Length: 375
Length: 183
Image (cartoon, rainbow over all chains, first blue to last red; front, top):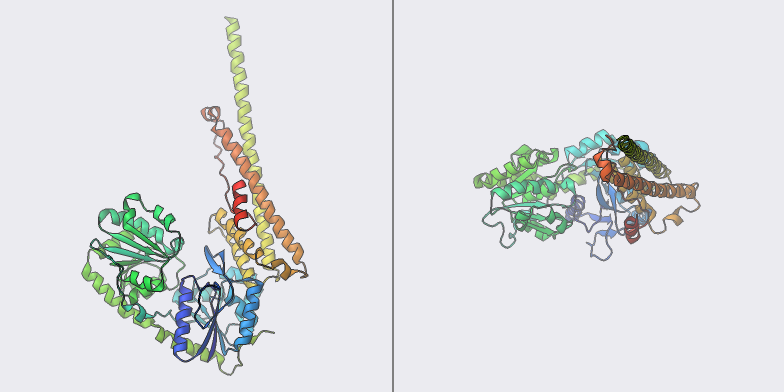
């Protein structure tokens, strides 16, 4: 099949949706399909051969955080050209309700269109009601996929129509083994965090607050933080006495990220909301890290209700400190959780997921012509 | 003896008059803050509504429309502090307006020029209204900081007015920063 995939967020910036698209595209290519991905991207950076750059993304506030998106008439004309030249059997747009390429692709194209919804966006209903232009674009979608029950619920409640649930895939093999970073986790134990440091919803402030308690109680405990954001600004949020035990790596490469997961005794996902699946959490599971995560619906689901990782009251630094403390004190429990996490995450491997996605494609293309420009 | 009484009474009267004049001034300043706040409110609401009009005009591509609509909605739903939500709207407008060739792409479209001009004018009025409001706040805070005002509690129970800080510059990059500093 010839598959055109639209990615709304900048390819160069690490993020769940981009990672999803990369892994899906590669899994589809592995299954023998021809794949082209259109994505905002910096021109200088090398891109995989299957990615078509649609120009630089612009950082704009959206849905309570800053996103790097491609919008405007220039992006629209690039998408139009891509659709025209691609001659796709199916168009697969991701996060169509974000103001970026996916929405533009729905707007300019006609033919079999599949959409994957990643994030729970409660605002969509209001926006859709107010904007016929959006409704028209989104009504062209023939098949909808939601990556989690939470995302599906939002879609059903706020946009209408139903969606098949196909959870995110994880390239589990890539995460299974890696060398810890030199000197980690160390004798005093270590807690890890991955994600944007400057986005409150990722929960770093909650973890830093909990570390004030944990770090004071346990003199050797260290905190390893990796992710984009201002390192200095984050460092200043740590009390001075603890600063030398909080290691902030800033943005790291994919390979280093996997090493980070293998460098800690406990991995923490303290997100306070907006997370529809928590790919980072699933990757930590694939690395066999014992996990402490917020009690968000998405995390509860992927961690099998708490049997594959500890859950703590969302946003509650005290509860996080207690849960992480219990795990740090109990190596047997950690080994137990690590094993359960590895077993649970096998269901999410991309090889399983890509086949499910292809069957959605096959359903919508049945008896249809290829994707073309809308009249 | 009588002379002293007269002098003391006169002085007390003068002091009373002076203090009540000062209290009146603080009261007037508070009124000015209230008036300026109402003007700022109005300017923000007006900007939000013309931005909404632009977003739903069908002139823009759906992605830009949605971006603006989302930001407008953010200024109304009360989920985020107002200064942050209004700053987000400024940034969304700035992102839309600073696309290379943005104006040219809309040239000749029905009502486009008027609508763009309205959005820009409304944005500029927000900039002005906020400047005047913060000005009034600064004067009031200064008057209330004086020892006499503090000792005699001349401001009564009126709350100390707060500055309203937000990103309200439609210019891009360095210029925006400079304008903010200057403002």
